[in-house]
Each structure stands twice: as C-alpha cells, then as structure tokens.
Image (cartoon, rainbow, N blue to C red; front, side, top):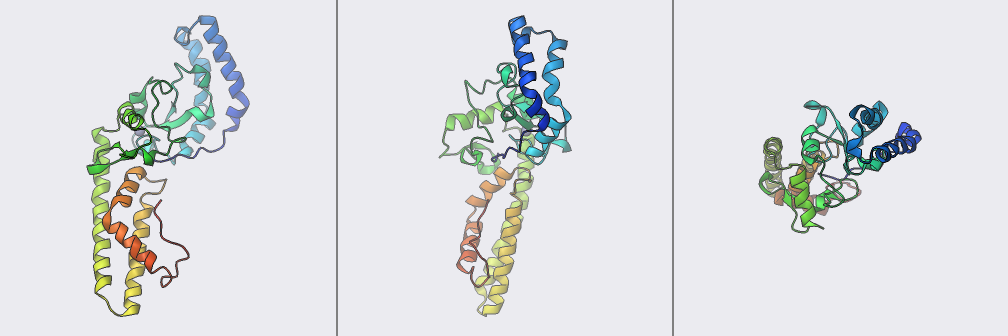
Length: 261
Ligand SMILES: [Zn+2]
C-alpha cells in the first residue's frame, strides 16, 4: 500500500452530489432506515455514483490499481468504486468524492460493511501507508514504528491482505528483485576491483543505471509498489550502492543525491 493522490472532483459529482445526497437522505427519513428503502427505489438513486465520468476518474486516481492490495485491477476483474466509509451506514457520504476509491473485488468484498469510523483502517489518501506496514518474507505486517499498530493490523484483516494470491504475486516480484540485487552486487564488486579512474567511473554509471531501473519498479504506477519500496529501503546491497553513487555524484555529474521513492 502507498499513498494515493486524489485528482479533482469530476464535474458531474460537483454539480449533482448535493441533490443526490438530499434525495437519498429524504428517502432514509421517509422509510426510517437506509436498509428499509425498497431495493429498486434505492438502486435508482444510489447507483448514480456509478456514472461513467465518476468511474473513469476513480480508475485514473491510482493508475488502474486497487488502493488496498495494489494489484492492477482490470487484468482480472472490473474496478469497484469503494466507499471508504460504508454507504450502508454513512449513506450521507455515498456521493462524497473523498469517500470514493478504486478497489478490486477481493478487497472490496472483504472490507464489506466494516465500520471505518468506529474501527478505523489505514486511509490511503490521508495516512501514509508506508509508515504502517512492513513485508518481511513477503508477509505483510504492522511496522514496528507504525503510528497506530492496531490500525495497521485491522487494515490487514479487514482487506484480507494476507491472501495467498497476493503472496504469489509478491513472490514473483521478490524473485525479480533478487536477480536485480545480484546484478547490482556483481557490478559493485567489479567496480571495487578496478584501479583505473575512467574504467571505475564507467562502472559507477552502470551501478547508477541499475539503481534507477530498480527504483522504477516501485513507481506509483507499478503493482505492489509499497512492497517494492520496503524491499529497496531495507536491502543492504541497495543501501551500499546508493552510498557509493552519492559519494561519487560529482564525478558522475549528478545534480543531486540519488534517492528512493
Ligand atoms: Zn485489492
């Protein structure tokens, strides 16, 4: 999980959400409770959030990824518009832009009607998820320095982030990561054994390129970016390579230090 940046509210929501909300609140008042509204009547008003413009904006929000598990959604299923605070309890937030996120069916179904106000989970827009989770041996768990370890733990359970399909995907990523780590290690050993300055600089450039390509695998657009960022920031070979590159940044004509996301 990584932080999500919310784009501007789609025009249709800007124009219509006060009216849609009022209609829904009136219906709840008329029938006494949200779940007492007849199905068809409820569907007619509630499903306005499925408007194509809203759906497209929600999808774009996180590069086609689910905000909880970071899988690319439409390779396996369609994008669910997830209400962070469940609409069945907080119906007045059904059309609130800040309450809508893209999610895969598995996270969405698992989260279900969990009451996120009474028992908060990590909000990928308001919290920084990278502070809440670590992934030793692929298994997601609460970070020792998590701002709220109970919230971390609850998020993992509520969104079912320990499911096997996610571990399988992360294991494939881990395999690729170790291949890159080995390449990096070989290039660093190679560089240490060289004495001629020009040849050394050439190797340092190769190390820098490898670091850049490893960093690119953890960009916002990539699946499981949170997991990859954890791998990168905790790996000793990567740490040493970054130190080496930054030590020689002038010879490499780099205008600033190399930094991970
Ligand atoms: Zn998901």
